[in-house]
Image (tube, rainbow, N blue to C red; front, side, top):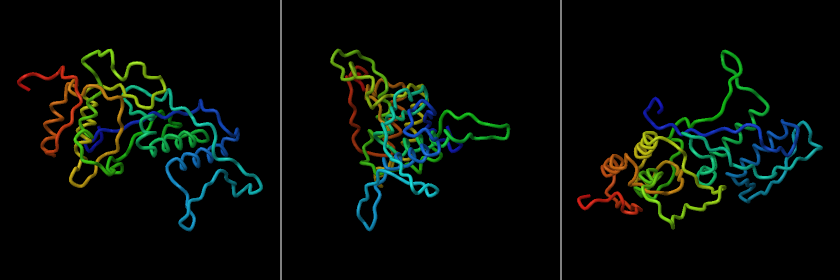
Length: 241
């Protein structure tokens, strides 16, 4: 949790292990930064889109370098108690931009603290308010993050047989950490203004199997009267409930 009580969105940082396009690390750093930026922006000139595929260094104007290379794999970046970079690639690619930019910079420099070089293995988002985006105001945008476990074993489950490189994953975290994330999402969930925190969906399982689901639903009901659309096998339902 942050000092303000918000859940801290933390991501792994992978340095090394990626095949470079250029063996000059300073050129490769610039290439990776440009390639990553072009994943989230479109360049324009005079109001028209400009398609760039190369660059020159001001100190070496006679030589041109290409921007795009083989796409780096996001496999192997999942770590317990951290958010998924693979999910971010689908929903919030600016986070992937940050991860690749940091990795590219750290390939040519070391961070230093008062005691000397500092080893870095991840990064965290500083302020959730920077990551608000338009929202449909659906309560599922908050309680849907409880659907990380299941209390049945259906033979026809859509998750069985998923290929290992599936884009969506559910980070392995304790229930208390998932509750903290949902309560932070609830804090910034504003259905009337149409704003909410960026999505980070994983594999959707059984939300009613989460040990803190009632806490989240009761708190959510205080903020919105919109219907709760809960996908469930019904295993957790009772006649009284």
